[in-house]
Image (cartoon, rainbow, N blue to C red):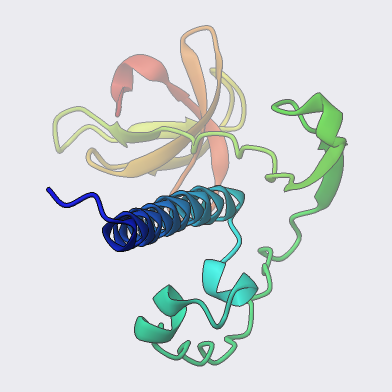
Length: 177
């Protein structure tokens, strides 16, 4: 090896250049690492990186597609309540802190329909529809006649005949469904 002053100077220059290049590379790498950390922090905050740094190489090379136009606004259907159903404001049982809510109050339940009964007996024996239990006869009804049972008093049932007459019949002579 030649240790002349020129060689020493050249080797020092080469070493300095190599060291400068190495330092620049290390600084660039650490700067890039900082940018990556900042990008990740921005992504975690929900901010679009390219909105904050539009000239960044990542944004210029990877342009996002243009946002699609919003869908045409559709009218929000109004809640239509059935007629005669009142809307009332009540406390919210699921979320007391939320306050109140509006609910539709259903109508009261209808009573069940009265039972339909059929007059029984042989075809030649008609059963009597009476004004009161064991009272005067209104009309005789043939077997198979449907009647509506309106009430019961002991072994007698108040019934409505097919033509609308209301009277009493002896219950053992009827079969009800």
